[in-house]
Length: 310
Image 1 (cartoon, one colour):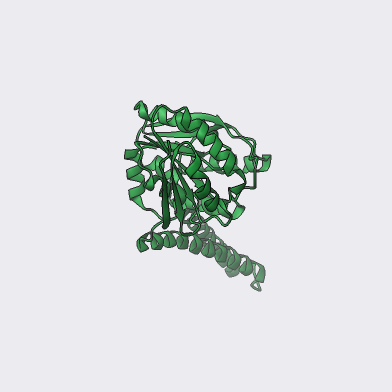
Image 2 (tube, rainbow, N blue to C red; image 1 turned 120 degrees about the horizontal axis):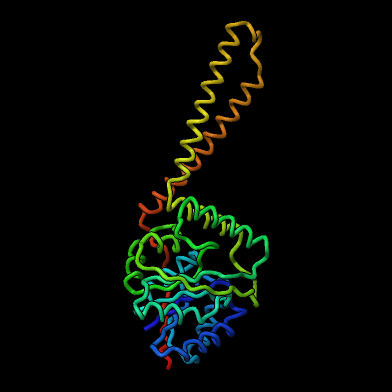
């Protein structure tokens, strides 16, 4: 059986089209399919609409309501945990990724060609500034953190039950699910697709969420910031030592009669900024350690409804 996981947040405007598309795709699948909708504490009527519509669709589904908004990746983890398929595919509710991807993922996984399948964007219709920022971030991320990641990053994926079990068991807080899938290893395959423009509503993927996602992606999977800070500290200390020697020599030889305030102010500002940067980076790692040591769950399920339709 194939379990399709769809996180839902502020999607009430396109749910009817989503259900029609999912119905069309699942009808063409020869194997049994269940669709797991995970409502991630959505403030609109997404939960009520799905609870009303799902009993009347022509596919089996499960409706998972989280107790609050935990974020898209945590909602996906909840859907993976609840799903009962032998293979899994994750899709976005806004339909910017074609639903047919789920069947392509299922075909590759069920034939044993790979354990994880990633959807790779061959093209995208996002605004040019968003596309440029995305390419810049993922280009740097691939070079410095995760070289195996495809250019442009990955959003959609499919996996086997074995991979699902390993990833769900990790229970990491504030992590990057895609990077975690690369970390666990296994055999990978890639399916190109064209990202479509969003037809209804607006994206809830705000700048603040993107920044948080970027920081979690970096701090959870590399010690590069610590090593960069160490390098800056070594360079700064060496420079300060050389500068001190120059000042002492100039003072002893009479070239400096009155100590200036400019050099002192620059030195204070330079090393003060390094100290602040260092405290911020170390603090971020300590926060992640604290979050994981608390062992709080990444999500809390309020209710699960089953709709066994044919």
